[in-house]
Length: 163
Image (tube, rainbow, N blue to C red; front, side, top):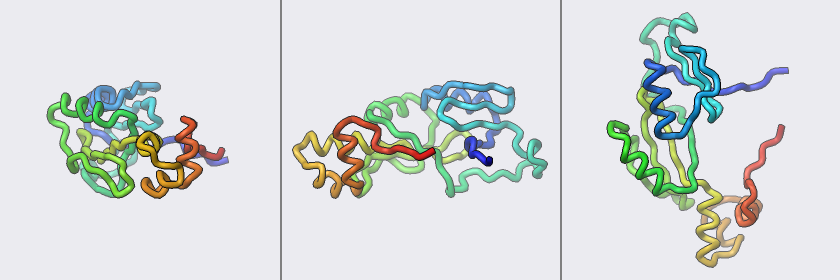
């Protein structure tokens, strides 16, 4: 049986990347194999990727803009304060609000991988319901199914994956 395991990011300096993901995203190392590290969020970092794969050194592309890591937070303003305390982190764009009322910011990691940090959508749903909107109204405002909003209102995990 074939099973997907995790995404892996090629990095120039494993120690710099471990520090970045630990400091800004509270990622803990769950497996450290030296130049290959698995983080608690379910992704891995790999130094010397070209050597490992037999590719030409320097053939990796920084800022390919065709993939991103995605993190969510219940405290978007708190994350922005944490981000401001990390000098040198480059923004892809400043904080913005999408049409579905989710606040997001995108940044680059030290190797040019794009990372999106978004306000958790169940938090967005609860914010609208706290303002007096019904489940149905909230679903329309945030462009999510009524079932998602209803689960968010009960503080249940609104996204369940099948195994």
